[in-house]
Length: 79
Image (cartoon, rainbow, N blue to C red):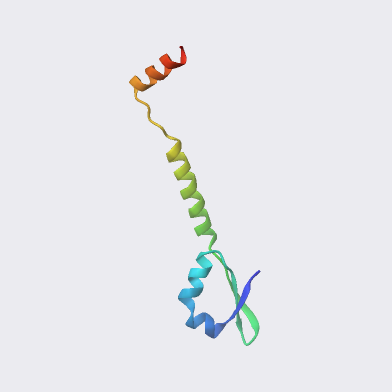
């Protein structure tokens, strides 16, 4: 649900509102009680967060095993 905020408050509290939007909140900006604009989190930001999460998972999955360790693991598995 969008929270309503007057245009004057939107102007005077813009940094605070932008922090809240970045955190996921959405606002409808009104002028004299009439809705004029919706302020919602950017979809590009959401896509960027998703890509960073995917990159982190893929990086964590890449485990480098030396040939010596691999031979030891094979030998342990054959016992």
